[in-house]
Image (cartoon, rainbow, N blue to C red; front, side, top):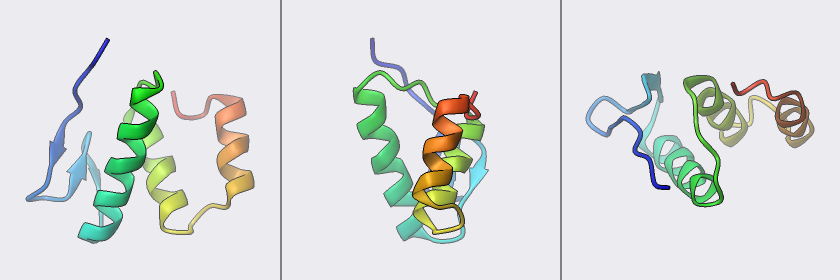
Length: 73
C-alpha cells in the first residue's frame, strides 16, 4: 500500500522536519522513498534520524543501532 508524506519543497521540510539545504532535503527524500518502497512507514523522528545520517551527524553504526531499537517510531 502506498502512503503519502508531507513534503514542502519551498520551506525544505519533510513531515515538519526542517532541512538546512536543498541537497540534504533531496537526499533524505530519496532515501525515504526507497525505504518506503520496501515497506518503511516514516515518522518525523525517522526523518530526523535519516537527515542526521545523510549530514554525517550520526554514523552508520548509530543508524543501525537506532533501527534495531526502533528509535524511529
